[in-house]
Amino acid sequence: MPNEIFYFSGTGNSLALAKSLAGKLGSARLTRIAYTVEAEIVSTAEKVGIIYPVYAFGMPKIVMAFISKLKVAPGAYVFAICNYAGMSGAAMKQTQKALAAKDIKLNAGFGLVMPSNYLPFGGAEPEEKFQKKVSRAESRLEEIAGIVKAGENRSIENPWYFPYFLTALASKSYVKGTVKDVKKFHADDKCISCGLCVKVCPSANVRLVDGKPQWGSNCELCLACLQWCPVHAVQIGRISPDRKRYHHPDIKADEMIYNK
Image 1: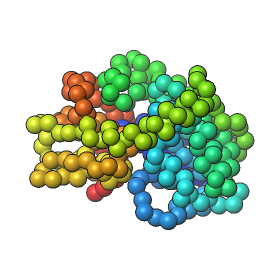
Image 2: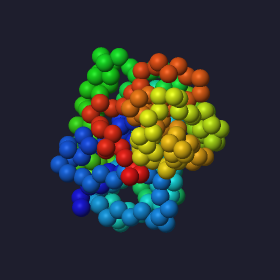
Image 3: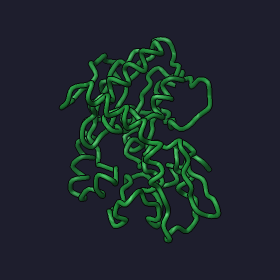
């Protein structure tokens, strides 16, 4: 197998990028990054990609855990793409360090701006703004596909606006705060007990109790449960339930199901 792309996606942005890049590369196996108890994750591909969203200027916990279990073929070309709405912060540097700890070289690292999907910071962006970001990302993917095909070594992209230690600190604080923030999730009276929130959770953190979702302590704050709810019943804290929800329009809920 020449290409394999591992992706973590809550609302579909990273999956949309992975699918598009796979097409531009000619072919690639797409493998989701999800909660796993496996001791080792082995890729035999010649070129291995990792695509994920930036959370609070850093890597999601689940991606950190994934890399700690990853093993690639000797001489494999490894690249990573992080996508973000504001700043990539410490994310790509964290990726590089995590891979280095596994004796894996990050040959190239890229950052792509994608539509915002974090409801506490605001609802879905206007269609025009969304289309501009997606169009720019597609253009960058063409360039990235060429780099990957050629096996070029590139310095990681670090478009930081603040010093690394500040963004790294914010990322660590975010990771520690997810257990506290998960207590803010709840389902209102619109809940129809469909269980989709359970199925799309990448960390198997949601379960139905008497027909209503309950959240555990292993949350990524990816907001998949909230953004994919078909009746907008899942809420977080006191955020207005009237805020427009978001998931990538080219991705269907069935593609996001982790727990069937």
